[in-house]
Length: 405
Ligand code: PLP
Image 1 (cartoon, rainbow, N blue to C red):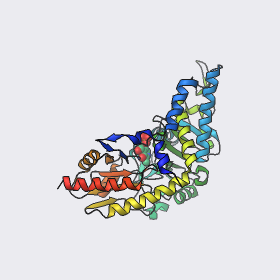
Image 2 (tube, rainbow, N blue to C red):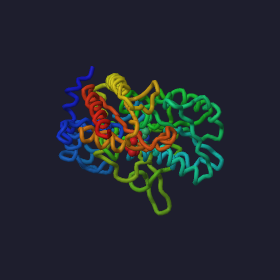
Image 3 (spheres, rainbow, N blue to C red):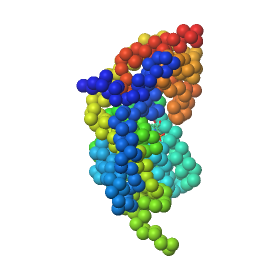
Image 4 (tube, rainbow, N blue to C red):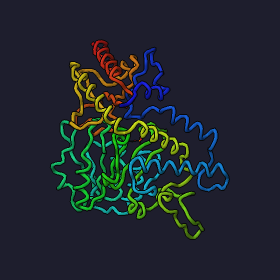
């Protein structure tokens, strides 16, 4: 369904050689490469239509504003939000979580309240809540994980008590690949009137996300993990929440009227976009989403599942290799350990073979603690990867084993 050869041609960096070997880039969970369409859009903006947005009556400003607000509509459509008012441009997933912590939860949270997260969260969906509960005398409560990398939801009913003011959970784990059953989790939380934030940093690039169908209250993701630029991301929040929230940062753009006595804030989403926004980032992100839509996110999902299955089968044949994260419903991430060899050495030797993997704790130290390991080597796939590349990765792992004796 996808013409992979043609798609690979869209990504100039995939023609790079590393250590005189063709690059095999499988660090996509950290960040994805950019298609020419995104690069061209940004180049064209700075060459032909760049100006500041919103405040100018001149033509360039109006053109840039149309592109910037058009980007918001592209994002809305991509995740099927009900209104562009619910789309806030932020720096990335991390800033989205921090914004919700400061502007939504902080004013509501009282001593003794609880915030529920899971054991498999990325640090950016742990620390903002941890700092908040410390400030407020509240408590962070953790949904536990099981050996296969699934969450243990058997006790969720009990955890969702009336002290819980928010449940914040990852849609797809960046270190295990687990895709959480968020629909069930959201239903159960909503039955107790508890709002839910989904960390969509890993999910949104790999399978269709419909925020209205999911009925999540907040959804955050980063542009750079979905083939767009760095420094741009999205906070989706239901209108009723955004309307009730206090501003995150203050300054220009987020106001209607200012005097030394009083400031009247702008309407949503502008109330949360203080200062000159990341204009090129937003427009570049829209170009990336248009690119994904032209391929079809369901086609991407289908192809990547096939790739994951093939990679898993090949990896399972390697003696001494143990896959960390074996949940039945997984996205295209394989974390593994090799008996007796430190992941840092694995990554370094694989790099000599042109294979770009990530090694470390992947900003999920509690996951490493659960499995009692310091780190893993992570192969995270994209639709531009191929079975031939997976064979190359397997050969590189064999080389690691030979080299390390
Ligand atoms: N959440 C998950 C699941 C992630 O994988 C990442 C990045 O790796 C983040 C949050 C943080 O994203 P960013 O650094 O783009 O803000």
